[in-house]
Image 1 (cartoon, rainbow, N blue to C red):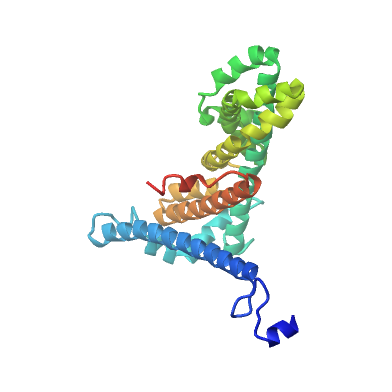
Image 2: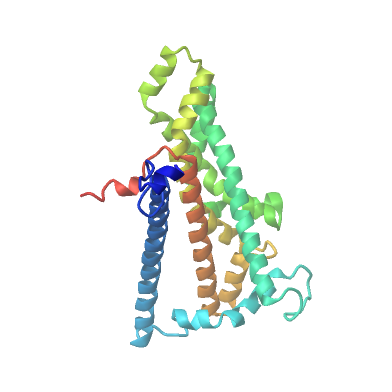
Length: 313
């Protein structure tokens, strides 16, 4: 090869700059990925900026009272002052003073971590129980006849109605908050699982039967993988429902959590603290939704990008 290069003959696959074709393509792919990420970041910032700008304009023209509906620059600028109120929601012993215990920054992290832990604990438990129950209902006819009517009956019940039951059963603490998340998601996820199973293409099942698959093999190797994309989408949507329910559960007194801070803001008539909590919850929800979408792309790597189907119209 050295003789060929000395004679002015380039080896196959090499470019004038000395980079091979695969290396050049790899660099182009990397640049395109970075460009798409930057483009999404730009549009995300522009969307949030427009919303904040409209909010600021309402305050600028006097259409919104800063005491009742503080603009973003007010409650974001007073982050340090608002963070100290999280210490009241993280007092583990009665009589602890406002200026003792964790620092304001530590109190915010502890509160966010506690609420996030309850959300994902309830979401995980509800997902495992609901998917398992949905498969069992369609697998066994007796389960279909004995369990499905009760689940359908309880599905429309508001999660708030289960709040006294959670307190009766578990008292005060983490357990009632997690129970509220589980009970709010379980019935709907069972029905969603059953609907996903019913919508599996009969061609898949017929091919498996033709190849001699048993009922257990059809469910384990055909039906469950077929419903996986739909169930991951349901899981992503139920993440937002879990956040809504856990705030209601925490407001009853679980010790510490975002729901407790929001109730404190309401009782003390502190709109800046309310919107600061809303900002934190929205930020956490956005981040975890992005993480779930990335996990969904990795798990369902064989599926095309559904967002690009209508771009050509």
